Image 1 (cartoon, rainbow, N blue to C red):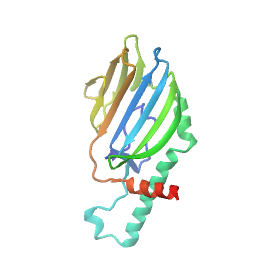
Image 2: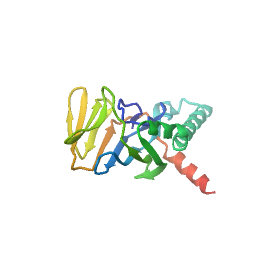
Image 3: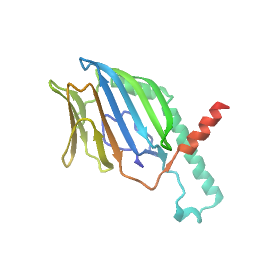
Image 4: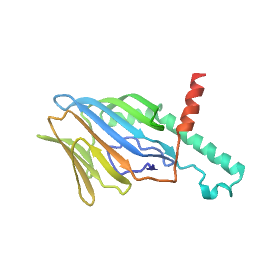
Length: 203
């Protein structure tokens, strides 16, 4: 897992500074005119930087450890709020997206988060990063970030020293790209907090 900051205009909802994720995937399905469609954004293996390392474990008091556990719980509550508050919906609307579903789920022994929505005329565009519908292709431009280990996609991937580009022919109505981040040992999964939260919801 790595910290949540990545320079990319198409990352609509950056997690807060204490949260992290291992990968993020965008999957977009267009209509025939490339004007409306569906979008799914998935954060994979979400965690927190509030952890007790092997080196510091014996040196910490029980009170200090309890404070870290509380901070980690607070990070999880912040994550839950991201799937419920109106600010996230407003951010999506600014880019032409209405998110119908926002939820957390467990998969492959990891905590994941997902946004599912519909859009009209996606607005991912600025000077350095953009997703553009051109005459013969769909063209994505991203700033290269040192945190990214690799990118998976069903398009044509090209990279320079500073820029990542992906292109798809307009015969491809569903496009996706997945950014996998470099490993970071200074994070811990929030899966246990999710399981406890889910159990309490059922009571």
